[in-house]
Image 1 (cartoon, rainbow over the protein chains, first blue to last red):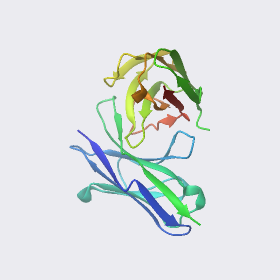
Image 2: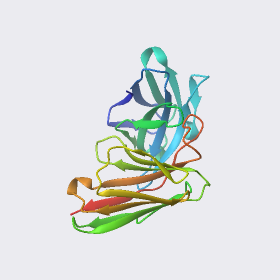
Image 3: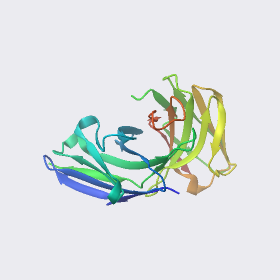
Image 4: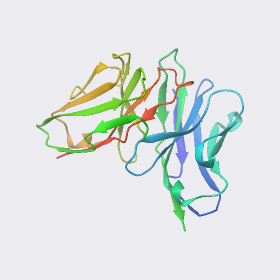
Length: 115
Length: 115
């Protein structure tokens, strides 16, 4: 079975500071990993995903994440926070099941940006 | 705008009412999904449809009844719900069921309150 743990349900950073949102997963086989963002009153939007290849993945809005197999982690970072980054962020893992892949989501981290 | 629309955006219903949630995708996708998002809980996959056929029912109570008349439309029929069913119901679509190549696009959700 697969699972996702997001450390910290709420994270606050100052505008211009580094953003670090943590995600650890458990999986018996190599996983596919995703970060989604949810702005207020909106659905989820894909930020980035790791499938195979390069372990450092760049996404939209200046975000990136690094897949570290030894640490079973896929932390999300952004060098400089912007007010528009305030949202809820969800990490998700998927195991391929021959065409019936399912996403398992974490509980989410709400990011607040302090002016 | 993600190309996935949901109506209504908000719904309040009594436990004896019957209502339906509607999802429409304008992306030409073949797979559609219903998720339940409750406070402080991970997103829960409810149903998956691929080419109008249901491929996943994640042990959802029978008071939730999905319908997929074509690849562009997905309904969730609700009857005799319980207060604990109050949540944000998200619809998503993807080109096919292959998550390692396809992104799921989410609608804005329907906020359901059961009194």
